[in-house]
Length: 419
Picture 1 (cartoon, rainbow, N blue to C red):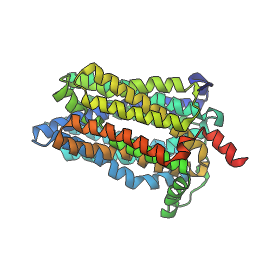
Picture 2 (cartoon, rainbow, N blue to C red):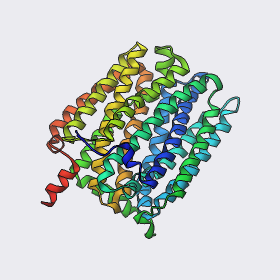
Picture 3 (cartoon, rainbow, N blue to C red):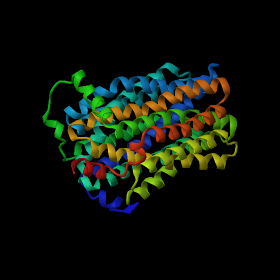
Picture 4 (cartoon, rainbow, N blue to C red):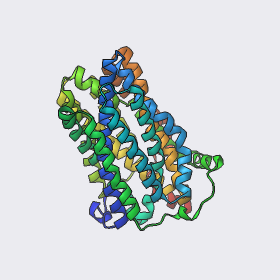
């Protein structure tokens, strides 16, 4: 890895700094909401005699279906309309969903269907927000700072996922879930403010062509014409599908490790701790031989997931979860950089939307399947099997895709293609 300009260098760009700060505040709130939803669903299901593993698994399904339906059109919207305004509007919608969750959580007997419904709303909102935000980033920094900008974005994400769950666990133990929903609602205001204060105008702003189905599928065609981009998306989808275990953490915290709400919060934060350290390190490093590094990182993710499933010792569980975060971040930085640099600007929104289906679809579908599996064979065995399958997946991908094994950097790939 080569040393490059670091975190403080990329933060000198005003509009990127605005986006980064607004997203950090919002991520903290969103992570608190996610923890609260899982905890609330666990207790509602237990009180109603429903399998907690199955009820928690359905959360993933409630996110996956609307996100998948929305994703391709969301990419077209990001490529057709001013991306700052898309971010602001979707944040307001998510804010309203959190308000509904807060009101519903105040009821003596909150309805499980209403919690699921708001999960659907936030999934649709996120499906439109993420392509716009990711496609906006290359407009905010010079091309030679994009790797650092992607790493800095992961720093904000992981810092938020350290602070959010940790604070959530403490607040749930003392105040319940309702305050977390109100905090999340307020946090979206930071994103709205940041989006409206930016001066950068994204290139798609001049285009107001109607959103067509053919335009939506153009992004899908582009992705699968690029073997490197497609192979990394497929690898990420199945790795996170097999390695999905987050939604079962309330079961591990309560029934296996006996650490309660506060311990659960730290478990949710542990992957982000490892990821934050890795992302901060990568803001000042350039990864060479990205293909092999990516494969090794995903393999380590599978090993750590398997250890988490088998562990009955709380410190070991935290270490294993932290390693999953570290490995996932290395993979995320590599995939994010090569996608942005190998995709033309007019297709970045649609490419990001397709990628979102793979990145979010894998763990969300995996959460449903692991919840269903855990309801039959138990949570530890289900997670252990998933981690093992993830390791086997890496071996199969390495054998079947020599282009990925030999891949160096996006810049190197572009230079070869134009030479």
